Amino acid sequence: MPIDPVRAVAAAPRRAEISWDHRDVQLYHLGIGAGVPATDPAELRYTLESRLQVLPSFATVAGAARTTERGEAGPPGTAATPGTSIGPGIDVDLASVLHGGQSVRVHRPLPPRGTALSTSKVAAVYDKGKAAVLVLRTEVSDADGPLWTGQSQIYVRGEGGFGGDRGPSVRAEPPSGDLGDPGKPDETVEKRTREDQALLYRLSGDLNPLHAEPEFAARAGFDRPILHGLCSYGMTLKAVVDTLLGGDAARVRSYTARFAGVVFPGETLRIRMWSGADRVRASVTAVERDDAPVLADAVVEHT
Image (cartoon, rainbow, N blue to C red; front, side, top):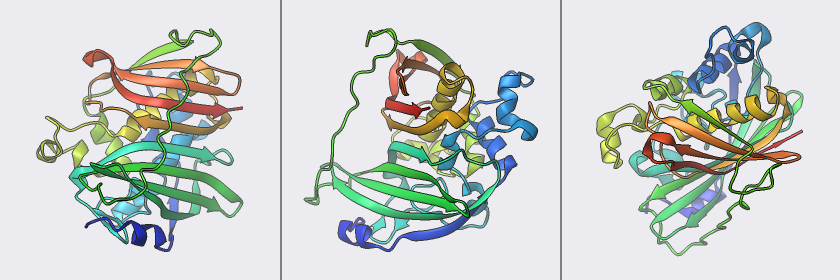
């Protein structure tokens, strides 16, 4: 069996030094749609090095582009895992892999330039019957202490049925905000993706051919390449920050979301937001496909 759950969870953590600078941050922000309009002061906070802030979702790609340039596999749960081997006990076909969910908790605002130690491991392997779910956890620290903790849920189709623990099945409470009506969001924004959005986003280090090669996408069951789930994830966080947090990325403490469906480059994201005292709940759908689900159970905790 390509997945050996006992071996995968027992494997020693993988440690790697990662680094990034303002160019990596700017490229990431451009990859999630920042910079429109180009001269808007609110957008220059994401694109101009002299006033740059860092969205916490950048943690999902930090160091990835430099790692892939060196031809190395990154730590589990990062965008820099271009091959099919995630770690000991796991060797799967990349076409069978889907990102199921992502969370990032920041311990302090992310700097535009940094060098840090990433420590990653497979925290759990769950048996969902027709699929296996890998829980990949990453802790990142620099010389000043912890920076962020990330966790990814990776679905591997066709690898379940080994008799393991099914794991938790948790859904967030129905969203409600200041308006008090679960059916009516406090804010709704629409963000159109570019037709070349996936090609731009992949320059931050996620080179999965699912997002660029039509033949590979067909093998995975799609009629054309799909947008990275983490791109939609980043676009959603930016919309929450810009709409409800005064454009201040440093206010974000954590961000979690479940990937509920795909986005095809060129489609429009409809982002509905419900604002509470210290958190924002969000759901994301694809406008052109009758509000087909994209992200669900999205929660941004903030100060």
